[in-house]
Length: 362
Ligand code: DP6
Image 1 (cartoon, rainbow, N blue to C red):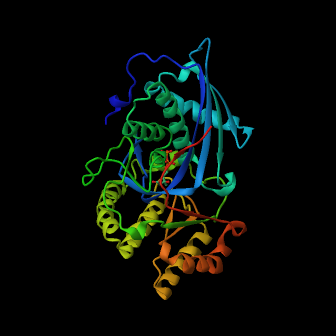
Image 2: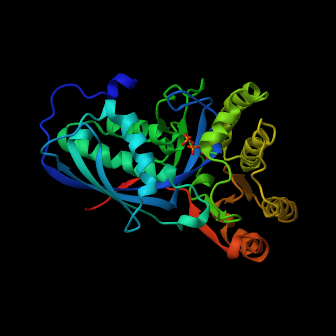
Image 3: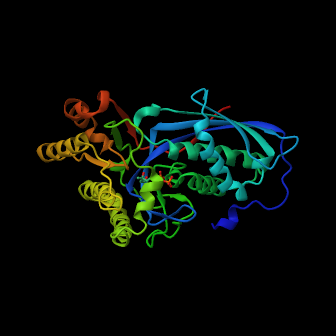
């Protein structure tokens, strides 16, 4: 599908009012999206596990304005309270998606949103938050166009979510989502995330992600600054090529269930993301001493026990510990005995691979 397919044509007879709701999960990238071009176009393809426990639930009540003002009209409650600091982000999001949802300026929206994870966990809610909001808005569109194909609904929801936050386009479906043009994935596109179209070995079913909260503070470097730093970075071209070849490697790994090779790709991707940040201008170290302690403990444990546990990182200090279902008990013991001590207030979140966003009864 192209951008044109997402533009609504013809006249919509607008409904007076209604309510919609969605719960959208977070996701964790195996091959990282880091670097983007104008219009939220990724500099390289990425792939992620959709999560299930970490999620945002959003409902939108919409009411037709008797006199549209040409401005966006909305109220927002975050965890039950007004949150004016979110308004500019939503305003920007609405502006970007306006050409594709012409009804936006004709309604007043009451947006209520909450996260399943604590706000101060250092876990970014932009992926799940933007995905939930995009799905709600698509549901409003579908109320007007009930014959809409499911495929178009999901692709456009992901497309809109991308315009809110790049990684959000990978939070609509599950369990594995690819985003960005890739030579070996015919259906792949820079415009939206697609459900991974190839075989996935059963070892990856129910894969676990225990998120160790090493630093619960605000992100030290915003995604915007991070992505910007990749533009003009001396290693960026090689990095983009590497992401392409890592995705090619993963295709075979995911099919064959080669967990040893999976570990190599996933850990290398995480460290590369951080290496790019360390070698940029300006440069940043996003890990904390405890991040490194945890990584070293994981490596030692793997060597000693033969386990297939591995780690990945986002653009921050928290560590995502990934492992297959059949090692759950052994790895959980290890986490509690050896890793939790490195978390802020011993806090961590148990998550696992999930099936994507779900519509809420409202
Ligand atoms: C490090 O999606 O937060 O999590 O498009 O500017 O909103 P924007 O960036 P964002 O970037 C997150 C990148 C990452 C890696 C990944 O999820 O692929």
